[in-house]
Image 1 (cartoon, rainbow, N blue to C red):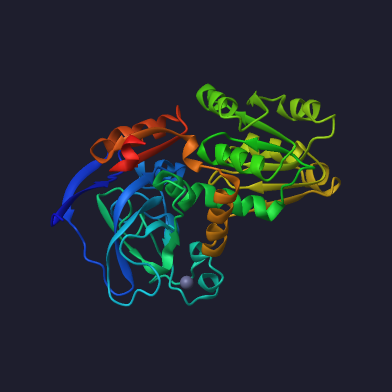
Image 2: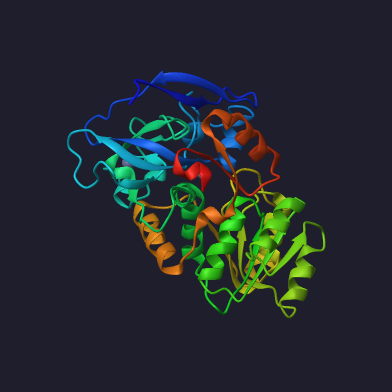
Length: 355
Ligand SMILES: [Zn+2]
Ligand SMILES: [Zn+2]
């Protein structure tokens, strides 16, 4: 192994800076991963790539980018208890203190330790490099039938969606509305299919994304975003509206549509980050007995459960990856993701690049 490696940094002016840095050595309880796949998230674009907007848990500290990493262990530090060299692993993308109440629930995303909560690609080095260091406690085993690109998709996007869908519950009685058909919305369609949803309706503004949702069979109907969306969704559902709605857009109008297009007793979950929404509680929620959930990322145990289900369902999250780039073209990968004219965008190495 070389002593130096290439890594991508995000200076915050819609560019990517490639630097040569030392290959790090794993410390106690840590492993060194050969990176195989690292996907780009909407939050990378929103909070880091264009400008450094994030504060607190979304504050980028000038580290190696990439919080959706998946790779293979090539070295272990002392004190590892389960994972070893050769294991294929997904990295749950926030490393918590491990001993606060949130960490003990597996929700390291919500770790309350200011000193020890550090997200990969935000406050500690992430996956946009040839190698990365991860803590063993943050690893999820990647089964042999799933690719590294499948795993990268679980690290953030599919995990986040699975959590939200578990909160509202999805079954064969349900018509589901998805507002926003970016990678998170497409993942919602894919998981709702496997959970047995009866009808899946998507809304977006980008024609490329609407087409991907239909071409991959992730939505039964796709609507262009507009003022008639609530009436259109009701027309597609016997005049009632959907039993479940998932907002993946963070757009104010789309969020209101998700709430208003849900039928009586409907459940709505907000996954998209940022922005605002204006609803009229009495007509939009209270009188129709609706529940709105917020859901942030997932827990390590639910991520492990999702991986098990993916195998059972023969569902490959990498199917919504539309573009793969080698590490030295990371700049092109971020620029494409920022354009929105794509599904998921991945930076890959070795066998994952040619897959
Ligand atoms: Zn993400
Ligand atoms: Zn903690």
